[in-house]
Image 1 (tube, rainbow, N blue to C red):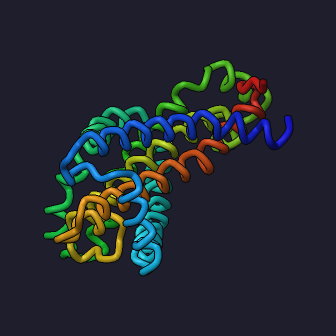
Image 2: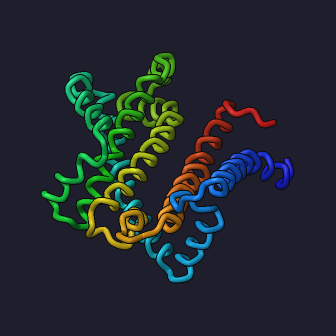
Length: 258
C-alpha cells in the first residue's frame, strides 16, 4: 500500500468528521447572536494569540510532564496489582471490589482529600491522576489474564513451563492485547483526571486544565484551551496506543489489511 493511500485511509474519515463538526459549528455561530457561541475563526485567533505569547506551549509542557510521571506510576502499580489478583483467588475476591469502587468514583471527589493530605500543590494533582487511572489498568490486566484460554496453560505445562516461566512465556504474551486495551483506558482516565485536578487545584498553575479555570477568560480562549486538550488526548491515543494495538493484532493475524 502506497503512503498516499495509507494516509487517505487513516486520516480521511477523521478529517471528514472534524470538517463536519466545524461546519455545523460555523453555521450555529452565524445564526446565533450571542457571544456564548463564537465562530471557529474567533477560536482560531485565540489559539494563535496563545501560541504567540507562549501560554499554550507552557501549559501543554507542564501538563505533559505531570502526566508522564503519573501515568507511569499508575500503569506500573495497576499492572502489578492486576497480576497479584489474577494469581491469588482470595486477594481477587477481597480487593477487586475495592478497585471497582475506586474506578467508579468521580475524579473530582478525590480533589478535596488530596488538597487536605498534600496541600494545594503538584502532589495533590498527581495523586488525583494516579488514583483516577490505576484501577482501569488493574482491572484490564486481571481480565486479560483470566480470559486466556486454559488450553494455552495446559500446553505450556506439557512443554515444561512452570511457575513464573509459564506466565512470562505463555500467559502474559497471550494476554497482551487485553493489557494494551487497559493502557488505552488508563490513558483516558489519567488525562481526564489530570485536567480536572489542574482545573480545581489553584496551585497547578501553567497547566492546560488551569487555562480553563482562569478568571476573566473569554469563550474563544476557553474553547481554544479545550481544543488543545482534545487534540493532545486523541493524538496520543491514536498515534501511540492505537498503533501499538494494530501492530499486536497484525502480528497475531487479527487485523485484515485491505
